[in-house]
Figure 1 (cartoon, rainbow, N blue to C red):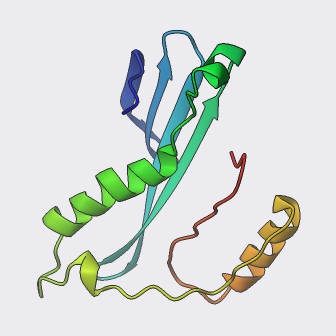
Figure 2: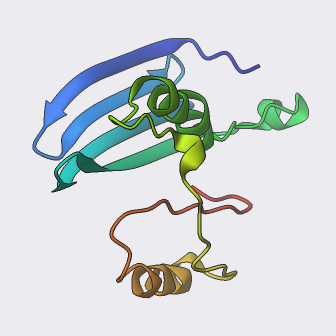
Length: 138
C-alpha cells in the first residue's frame, strides 16, 4: 500500500476537458489527469484519459525500497473501468466485459521512434486504448 500526504485539486474545467491534479507535501510526487470527451455517434462517446506523473526518488527511498507505483494503471484499472463497468451501461446493458481487445502493434525501442509507429498504426482506429509498458517510463 502506498500512502502520500498531500493535496488534490479538482474538478477543474478547462477548454481541454476536466482536470484533476495532486501533489505530495514534500513535492516528491505530482500528478495530473485530464479527461476529454468527444461525441462519435448517437449514444457513443470517445473518452480520452491523459495521465502524467512525476516521481522524485531519493537515495533513502531506494534504500527503503520505496518505489513509485504505476499511477496510470491504478487510475484506469481501479477507478475508471469499475465506474464504467458498474455505472455506465448502455440501453442493452452491454458492460465492459463484452469488449474484446485487438492488439495492433507491439514494439520495443526508443519512445520517439515507437511514437511514430503508434501514430501510423492508429490512423484507421476510431477509438481505443494504448498501453505502454517499460522500465523507467514516464
